[in-house]
Length: 85
Image 1 (spheres, one colour):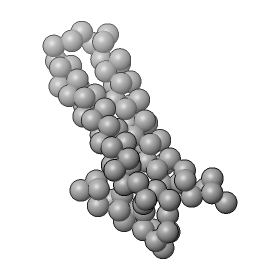
Image 2: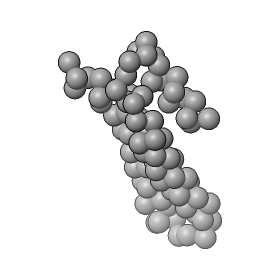
Image 3: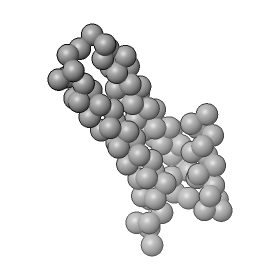
């Protein structure tokens, strides 16, 4: 699913985008970001066993993982094409 999204995003600029030349690298970066989000979300499943005072740290970790994933996606979509002009 995610690979299809990146392929369609890479073709958004009509075809000759620098990031399309290295799809493995882009896919790897996306998978790393997704894994970080998944780990953080898995930690939320343990909230019932933790004191309420530790809940904020878990939610912060999820927020940070999501922010990282969005930043990576933005870099992949705009990075190479904007620096090549």
